[in-house]
Amino acid sequence: MMTKLEDILGTLLHDKMPRISNNLKSIAVRFLPWIIIFLGVIGLISITLVLGIFSTAAAVAVSTTGTMTMHFLTSYDLILLYVLSPLSSILAILSGYWMLNQQLRGWRLALLSSMLGFIIHVLHINILGIALNLFFIYLLFQIREYYHN
Image (cartoon, rainbow, N blue to C red; front, side):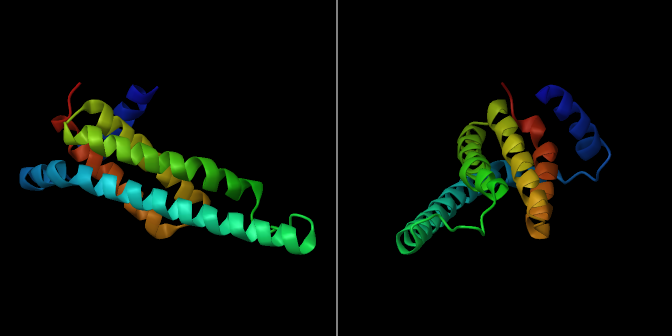
């Protein structure tokens, strides 16, 4: 399934979109893995802080009222917070590490992480996040030729 998706997106983002120069490609291949790792670590730190704040808020809410009164978080938000966001960050860190060695599995994980991030940002209607994920996906397809099995 991933190869079909790669083919479709590759046709759209590599063949039909403007290509970047070889100099920019080599810069991207050199620095993009580090940027991806950095963003993944920042994401995990952010998620850990948010989970700590919500856990503290939940403890306060339970201790003061005797019941759980966290109405501001829906089950949808909890799935994004507890599952998809950490998964996206972990995938980003792993993909960046493997991309440093120019491994195709790192490139594929980076694509998967970016697509997951795109979905998260669409669900939260985060325009900046959507734009950044689309840019990363475009950039990944521009440098795909540098990654091998």
